[in-house]
Image 1: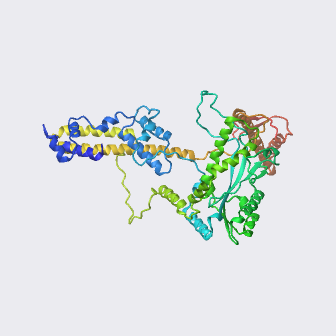
Image 2: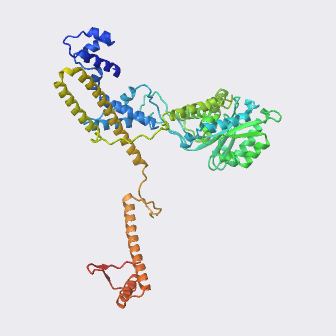
Length: 574
């Protein structure tokens, strides 16, 4: 029931409170109220919200405060998880002495949240990638790209990039079996080895043969012998790391020129998009581009995940088909060499994954061809607007507001105190209403207004308490650990437990304290010897210096200035 309808019902009942047999039908018509609801409320059966709130873990006030807390965290770009909602609900219930919520309460609560809330999966993303979504810089970059693409046909607009394949990598899949436990796991071969593939595509749907890089120092004969499925045009290279390098990138550029020179007309230009990897920005690489009339265009740092065509559907489709093919291979047989098996499968995988339709779609979705920067910029602008929609607006006041005077009686600071104060006021209002029977209508209005006020204050109190506890926990996480950093090493030939390590640290600290103490005694002795002293004092200092330097083998006693404390210093090797 809406708060407006409840208010009108309360007002209508207040107008007939002094009548013995009121005409509820006429009252319902004149007040535009549901007749059955009005009859039920007249006979003090209570409203539906009160009855339903008694069946819930949180009452209406507590639930409203929880929703407001969720909204506040959402405005601070820290949306709540189920665990945070559960913690907040239990905290509210604990303050009122109620038992905690059930295991699935948070899931049910999320499903009945007000309109405007969405249950989504939050994915982590590199901070640099998130910060790279700068609208003004992206617009500048697209303006630069648009100038270079003028007069260039789509068959001469290229994009190349490297991607890695983890040999033996499969994917989870649903299977039908009579052997439930023995078929749960699927073995893979040579898991962990990396193969790098340099792929290049054109805006008209054309794709260049891949340049494969295996980890190793030499090519193996087994990779090529009796391998009919391997495309004979593929370029296969080896490197100690399995990744690209400056020399490999330059070698690929020569192959790219030979593969695409027949696709460009006389004195025509080719545009080559790539990411800002260091191997693509060497002098030799850029100089060769200049010689062959290739226009190199680098994507802005950390923007290739949404601006580069290859990072869209082509690489995603390639990885999916690769894992699917590995799953089929490992299910039927276990090849001896993962690299040879990769070379047998990669031709078929690329035919399925990198099709002309997928390539053209990738260039279209990144706004490169047909040239349309709004495809990339508009979604980023929308996310930016949502992120800053609730930012505070600076308002300039025409005058300085007067400071508020402090109240004489301090208001209740906790939810418990606010509840106690509200109960006292309700009792006082009931007592006054018994004494003022002729002012029934006015008292009913006062009760209604006070109930609304109390409900609002309870919601504010619950919300403020949860927000304060959340901010304190955030501050505790951000507070640096107040411990002294040290780079000292603990030498050990075997593994150390924390107990053994702390024991060694304590022992070394004690030895260093003794050494510091002896250094202080030695410095004090040297300072005293350098100044003229009385004969008896000189003798004491000589004894002290001799004891420090190790010349005096007798135990040394030192007495304080008042002659009260007598202490014997044991010998300690300096």
